[in-house]
Amino acid sequence: MTPGRHHVARRPPTPVAATTVTPERAENLQAGREVTQWAVLYYVSYMVAACYLLTNLLVGVVG
Image 1 (spheres, rainbow, N blue to C red):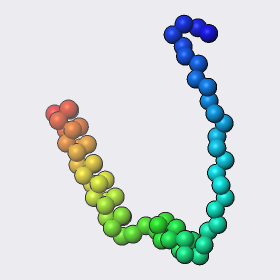
Image 2 (cartoon, helix red, strand yellow):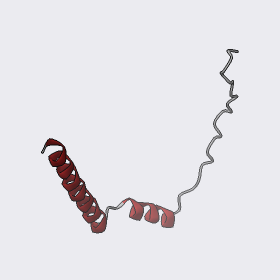
Image 3 (cartoon, one colour):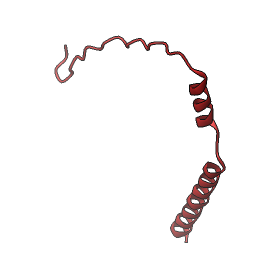
């Protein structure tokens, strides 16, 4: 073993138990995957603010 390096023993990954997906759970999973209009609005407003900030930073650096 080289000085300054520590050997870390790693365990093998634990297998994930198979779970049964009930119809209620499947509906909840599907509902969670849907994109709402609020999410689109939030993303668009975030991008507008980021572009505004980036433009102002570039104008400040160049000007």
